[in-house]
Length: 332
Image 1 (tube, rainbow, N blue to C red):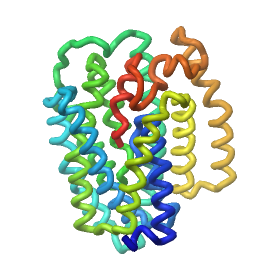
Image 2 (cartoon, rainbow, N blue to C red; image 1 turned 120 degrees about the vertical axis):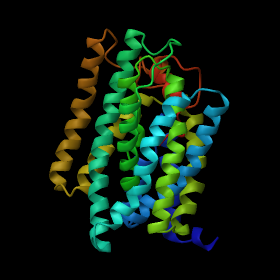
Image 3 (spheres, rainbow, N blue to C red; image 1 turned 180 degrees about the vertical axis):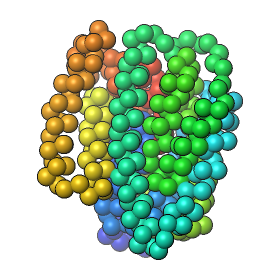
């Protein structure tokens, strides 16, 4: 109990609660936000990754259990993802430990997280575009059986597992975009259910290896779990009151700027890039929507308009993107 009463633990509790709200609002994974937040709170990068992975194992198990009960995952597809992801996820902590001395390991993980955040921002944007295109074309809404392509699926799992094993960031975006490209006919609820089911052993394998190599800091782990769960619940409850499209664009900007900061890009350049994204990003997305015959700007009442919004856990989903995000409030 004393571990929760320190100033640092209270700061982690508050940040975990806020990140949980974002997860509940958008359905995106919290690792891309929580791990760098822990680093900025002066938690060593290796400890931030280890504790965030353990906390994620708890949250993902809950989401996967819901999808399993409702029969939504494609188990054959999840199996091939797990065959690729579990070994590489388990290897992550040992790869980090082989880098060198403790200081070199911290620098390596910090650099890897910075790169992973930029990668996540890019794939998150691509995923939103793919969802919009699928909504406009009407793909991914039927019940057609998909043929599992085992080799590319295994390779996607292996890359996603390695990314999580080293950084705890990015597997959700990478695997989801890859599945959207490989299996455009897969129903949205099955897509999300498959991702959640395969993510549980992936995250647990990565967490076990990091616990073996780094250990667990209860003063970090307990606030992560206790703050994140109510935050996610609250975010999911108020999601229908918030324009998710605006929140998501803000997340992409935050991920980009955080990644650049961890890569030690000079602050003035980070500020210029942030201003450009803030001003030009909405205009660019409005142009993309118009190219696909949609209104340039979403309204709160219309939700995502095809892949960019819709409550993470509230209200009946409308487009493919809505259904995916509605089912995925626990995904990383």
